[in-house]
Length: 192
Ligand code: SF4
Ligand code: SF4
Image (cartoon, rainbow, N blue to C red; front, side):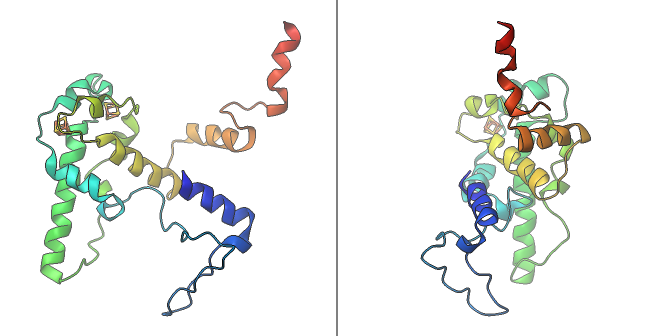
C-alpha cells in the first residue's frame, strides 16, 4: 500500500515529510527531497466521504439481486454479513448525507458514520474470499467497502479482538504471525 509505505518513510526519515501547514496558511510546497504526496489523512474508511466515487456509484448501481449474498460463505453459515446489505447500507448513509447537505448547504456533522449502518460484527465476518465480487452481474465490489472499513477500524481506532493483537505484534516484530524469532526460522532444517 503506497500510503503506508509513505507513512513508514516519514517515520523513518522525518526530513522527507512535507512541512505541516501553519494555521490558516496555504501548505508550504514540499521540498524536492520530499515525496510529492501529502501525508495520509486517514487509513481506510469511516464514512462515505472516505470511499471512492466508484464505491459510491456502486451503491447506487446495485440491483439488489442478492447473488452476492447467495454466494457469500459468511452469509451461508449464518453470520450477520450480507454483501447485498453492505451496498444498501452504504447507499442509505449516502442518501442521509445528501439530505443533510441539501438542508444545510454543506455537510453538518450529525455524529454518525457508516458504522451506524454496518456493524463491526458484519465487517469481521468477511473472509475476503471475493465470491461476492465474482458473482455480481454489474461488477460491484462489496468487498472493497468491507476492507476499507476494516482498515479504519484497525489502523485508526485500534479496534481489534484481543486475540488479533498478539498476531499483529508478532507480524510487526517477527515478520510472521507466530511468536518465534525470524532467526530461528530455519532451525527445523537441522532435524532433516
Ligand atoms: S468477500 Fe466477504 S462479503 Fe464477499 S462473499 Fe466473501 S465473505 Fe462474503
Ligand atoms: S450481486 Fe451485485 S447487484 Fe446483486 S445485490 Fe450483490 S452487489 Fe448488488
